[in-house]
Each structure stands twice: as structure tokens, then as C-alpha cells.
Length: 223
Image (cartoon, rainbow, N blue to C red):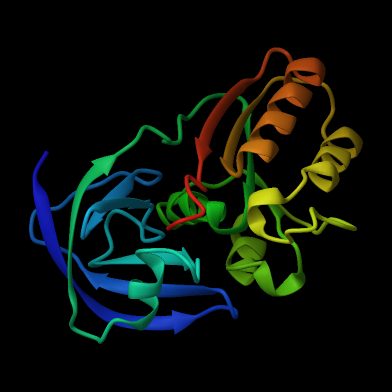
């Protein structure tokens, strides 16, 4: 797979731990909403999905800062104009049109592929965003305008570590049970492994004729 070079154009902080970067888009680089890029830094590889629509002129990423990590601190502090190398596109977490209603569920920055999909014109979806606090509801205003239903899911309590790797799906499951009649749906789940496991098991029990598509968005605590 070919590699590309991009340049850091802009950085914007969304919260104390999350920021957005805009990168130049290399000539000839194409991707589909939901796919991701693999960045190379020293001896590590790190994957990020663009929040941009495929037709937009630049590449934007939403990054959760791991202070003890290897690559995200570099993205958080690099000078404007710094160059990065990546390959892609990678992955198959793509929207598949059908007659079934799409249900999106994300933890934290796992919302990014759904933002790219919405910016690509996808509509008619319900989005459940599972975060520890209000300030982590990134892109809330955009989804309130584009989703059929936008559902913030803030748990009453989370794992003592208190990060997005340990967010429970309880509030999301409660919403589904109360508002989603038994039927067949297309579920798209992106985020931590525990959320994906819990929602998938719930769907298997309550909506057995549904399709489930998943993307684990937190691959490492050492990003």
C-alpha cells in the first residue's frame, strides 16, 4: 500500500484531553467515510479515522490525548507545518444502505467515523454517544441537526480509572430498550471493546434479525 506525506495546518482543542487537527490532503489520496489512516512515527503505527467527508479538501482528525503515549503527544505539540507520513485507506467500517433503520453507537472519539458519514450526506440514523461528562459530547450541535435522534449517554458512574476505555453502555442499552421496538436494524458500533460487547449481546437477544458492524476505536493505552 502506498504511503503519503501530509502537513499539519491547524490544531483546535475540544476539551482538556481531546483536540482536532487539520492536515493537508495529499494529491490523489482517496478514502471512504469510516475508513482510517495509519500514521508512522519512529517505530510505531497509529490508526485514526478522518472526520472529514471524502470530498473535502483537507484531512481532519479528532485525537484523544494519551499523556504517556508515543504519538498523540506529538500531534498535540507539533509545530504548524510539521510533516507526517501515513498509509491508507484501511478498514471496512463503511455504511451499507439497506431498508433497515441505522443505529449508531459510539464511545468518546469513536464518534468520528459517524461524523464523516454524516458529512457525506448519510441521514435517517439514531446516534447514541457514550461519554463520561457533557464536555466530551464532541460535535453535539452538528448531530442534533443531522440525526433523526441524538442521544447523549452519560453514565451515573464509571470504572475508577475514569477514562473512555472503561465507559459502560448501560444508558445506551436503557434507551434502546425503551425507545426501539423489536424489529430489524443496522447497528454500527465504534469505541471501546466493552461497549461493543455489551451492545452486541443486547442486540442478539432483543433484535436477532439485525445486522451489527463494529470498529474497536481504542486499540492501545500507549497511543
